[in-house]
Length: 406
Image 1 (cartoon, helix red, strand yellow):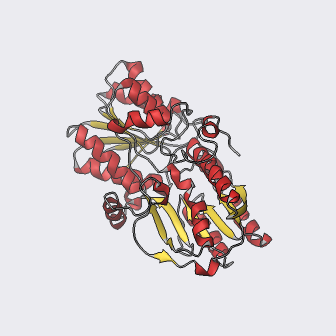
Image 2: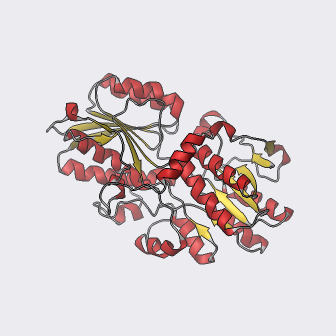
Image 3: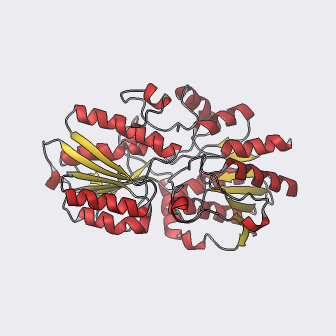
């Protein structure tokens, strides 16, 4: 099956600036469009290096797993498995948290960062946490490594929280944090070590790819064309989304062509327009929701039927989905996970066991559920994520509506 990619003209740090668990900053421009032949490159088997059958099988199984924990608090739910004994860290003293964050450079991370800070208020009021010193790496591996080493050298951290910018590069720094003897909490993206007290994340990229590709297959016919819009290469959670989807498309006779877009709306519109001129486009698959509205608008501009489409639980997609009545699905990379690391700090301070790998629920929003999520998030900006999980926190809803980013 032929697969076409738009080559990125960004390099080095500029590419790192759009690394994300879920989505990218819409303001990031600079991409060549699909109409520029010099920006296109045909590749074969590009996802093979990212596909691991055992991981695919595990995440498929986890999609139907029973989660333990409070039914109305998905950020505290988990799949039963090994736990970490935290009794050595039990204390009645308020804890200083040192947070090394990859960035808040996109709407998904900004939404989570707001939620995390509102959760912090609660835990500071209850004296579990005295303060959280945060260093933002601006999507730069070297900066985040320096940030972690700074925290270690200062020696004033009771707990480390790390949301890695990338997997391999940050592994040694995470290991150095573990060597201090203080508890380390990793969340969102992983590293290549199991030294952390807990690694917190939703099910993962394969689950996203499985849910979205199966939705498209169920609503399309063999031989239909799907345009896959991808942010950029080399990010594990994004690559595994595509690896899973590509496998399912190939197995079911769906013609899939994929492009890297850097979530640039102009690039997305150009790609979709070019593909429409080549023939019918029956479906659109995305590895993140940024740019979903631009993709839909391209169909409107050409005066053709809307595709079957997957976006994300970002409000802009949910609203456009409702407005158009297209056949859609909103996968999620559960934004409420930003609460969980701080609640893990509370558990550790009490000496309670924590899941060694804390797998959180990851459930897409269906058409039947869309209206309820739109109503629940009425007044939220387009860059907000419906499953942010902060409805019971102080400042709701104004802090999120006004995007009060600390």
